[in-house]
Image 1 (tube, rainbow, N blue to C red):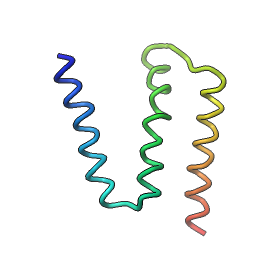
Image 2 (cartoon, rainbow, N blue to C red):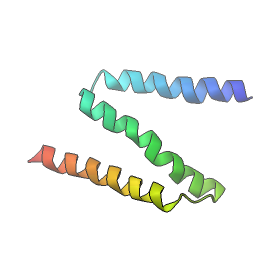
Image 3 (cartoon, rainbow, N blue to C red):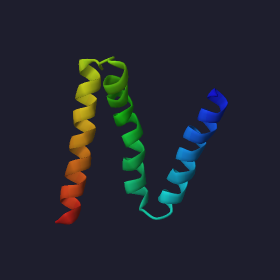
Image 4 (cartoon, rainbow, N blue to C red):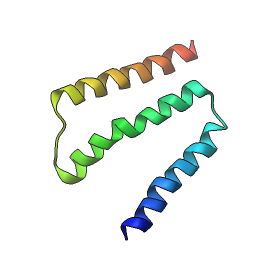
Length: 76
């Protein structure tokens, strides 16, 4: 079961990521890759009840702020 989940979840995720990277700029692809690190602790908190430390939350806020600033400045 773990082998199947590993192949589908990890392999499938990277396959879709590789297809998507071909359609966006390298800068956007690197920001998209950051979402994996951002959403990991969020999913754990939601489904397992293990909440991240203050340092993780500070990092989360910094990365989110950078993403939103990039999106805001790109429109101007």
